[in-house]
Length: 311
Image 1 (cartoon, rainbow, N blue to C red):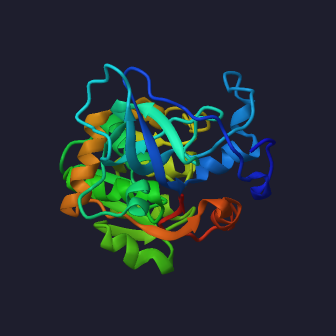
Image 2 (image 1 turned 45 degrees about the vertical axis):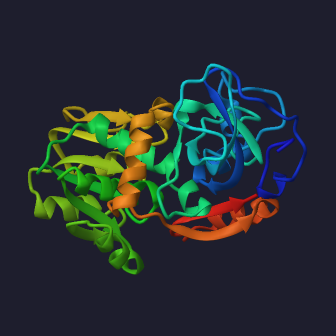
């Protein structure tokens, strides 16, 4: 974008060639996922942050797949020119994933899962790492009970699958149309989504569950389902400020930038995608020139899996 606005603010433009420096690799991008957070970059929400870069253009995009085409001098990495890779992008102004060429820390880049195409690989890094970070921050033990809202979405779906791989019991929400999808992801119990979710959880677990991954942003209403001494992992920075006093619940807002160079966590996701513990879901593949239409579709709602731009 050269100015913030609706989907129509996205357009093609040329940017200067970039080169990898020490500790970096350059990727020829083949695919970039379209995430809800990209729409906040596009409409100017993130630009209001005091530390946000002010220069234009702004380029959205938080995860990519492609080919390594340059390794920076002195960079210690097993990656080599020609390797097919996927990467997490911590965007800043023009440093976003919707571009044909991007330089990234080598620590943010790992091989694509075996047998996976670029579009599917690009759907994993950001949401997968956010889910992994949420579970790590909650620190629940095998056998404990985790509630998940927004379970049919990308973040929520990965939370369900990773939580099951960690040995947790998962209680997830779903609309009628998404029940089979959420069950297929491994949820032990599937309940109706929406404001009645907390009551439905408490009917099954009167003392409350051990944790909640609140992908649907239910806030204080969702936190009612969590026992005293439990934990809520949240996105968009929510810290439980509106929860009634007297509740001893720990809130863990997650920002994926904290795992932006966690090579081990990203490579573990690669392995779990290869083993089938994690399912890669692509809703549609769209030429990069049609990014505006992809944003409009995402904002209209109902997309299951990721829309992916191809270059």
